[in-house]
Image 1 (spheres, rainbow, N blue to C red):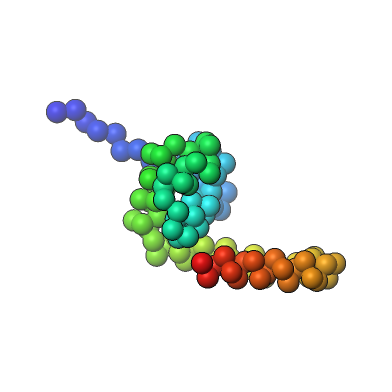
Image 2 (cartoon, helix red, strand yellow):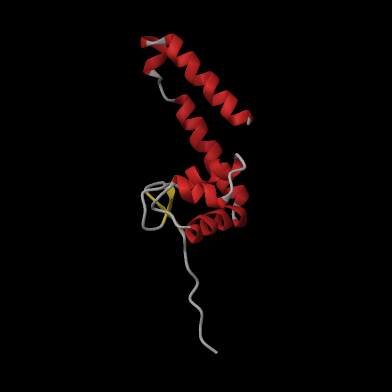
Length: 107
């Protein structure tokens, strides 16, 4: 019997989760997965990711769902708390972006 090496697909560095060997965040994969995209579609959207890495990232998310969901919520709240220059400089564009964000989260 041969010993099997367990592959790692996600790492925590620079205060975020990243697909190992890429500059692609786990966040990107999770949001696509939550929208109902199939792993094959996600892999096509990110040329640096093969299907194995996409499945590895999704598996990591599902195995750590409560922690990753809490992390994502924290990141969203931190982003929302940041000053938004568009709100002052281009209020109509700011409103359009907020509407787009709301509609994408409801999908």
